[in-house]
Image 1 (cartoon, rainbow, N blue to C red):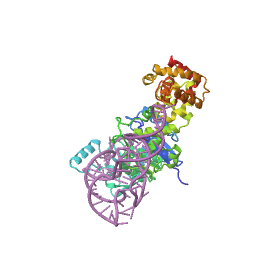
Image 2: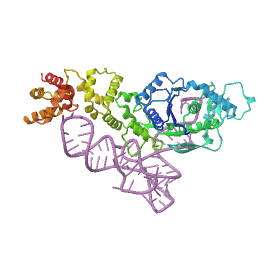
Image 3: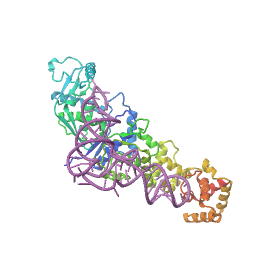
Image 4: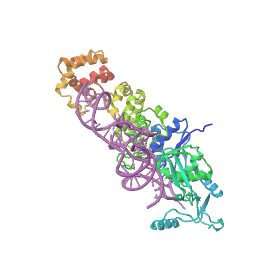
Length: 466
RNA sequence: GGCCCGUUCGUCUAUCGGUUAGGACAUCUGGUUUUCAACCAGGAAAGAGGGGUUCGACUCCCCUACGGGCUGCCA
């Protein structure tokens, strides 16, 4: 049987899920789901001092919002420490690792001296081939016996074959003197035990792959297929930092970008399928592959993100958009929609969704459907409701009272009214819009009237004209 | 310092030795318009620099520059 593809996302819970991590998770998810495989989640919480449950929570929430669901239970790396130690000792008894009694001070002194002498700072432990009989009764770390000669080839699907000379690999520590595993050991053991077949992660781990391969080889385990993807940079090309864009995904959620748009944008950032820019999840799943991943770091472009999001909102299904909008409102602390608001929103959605790129914009355009009488016009709208304009609306009102309230009829009435007074339709539409919505950016006045209904429309006009 | 990775319009990218180097966002011009958004037509805009290889290089090789990463008893 052909083995199933298994990918994983393995964040450290030391902070929020930032955009780069989100994209890494997305690529793993896309690849696994697209190939009918599994997408696992492991929290790398072995650094007890920096790991927090709040961060884990934030990461899980971020992934959930993005729609990236994982298979099985979330694995805690810390919980698996005994198994990691077991592997280290297995390697020790197999003669592929050794106890090193050099103290951190000694090593540091060596490195300082080496640096001063401009020599290699690679530490060569004197204990590598020491006779166990000479071992002192002191704390020790367990180091792997790295190959001294030859080279290690990282067969990377994104970076190609990367050759590292073994001479520059040191006998890395696997188990600390307090018996806890270091990251290099833990990832390898966990990835192996979890059956991970494809590792897709940031290219800051590219060099580490060579070190990790030493463990795979020593244990006789299959090496996963590597894909080291470039990191995302900020709009200025520098590394992401809190100053620009390295926000947690929950902040993107708070800014009102729809998750589908985020997925599309993030997928296209650093990956391509010809010239395709806008695609659905189904298409992304079908098209996503490792070959399409680029090797250069990409920058975040909020303008394009917005554009893509706008397309997703426009293409969204009305009920689903309403649902998402409600969730957005809830996440940002807005009061829940009333039934009346929901009904109006649903009716208005076809007209709203074509004019918004984000949920705040959608809400802004939807104000007419949300607001209660009397409508308080904002400044620019109020300016359109001067005496003359109010007079015009007053004259129009009776004709509306007898309208059949279809779009055609309303349009005919309005146009005839404007023609009769030799005014441009815009002269009428402005005040009408201001009276109905209290805003200057809204859907068509006719669509608003249809959503509001005759009674509400006339009531708002009456409010405005006094 | 050593080693590793990267470099096509402002941005994301296509190209996998032979193209007037294409698309998208942004930008500019014109049009449409009921505000906003959108839409239509058009414009400007790119192979970091230098050497090779080749009949022919954005594409392959080398050097330089610039950017990034690793070099921990961090992850």
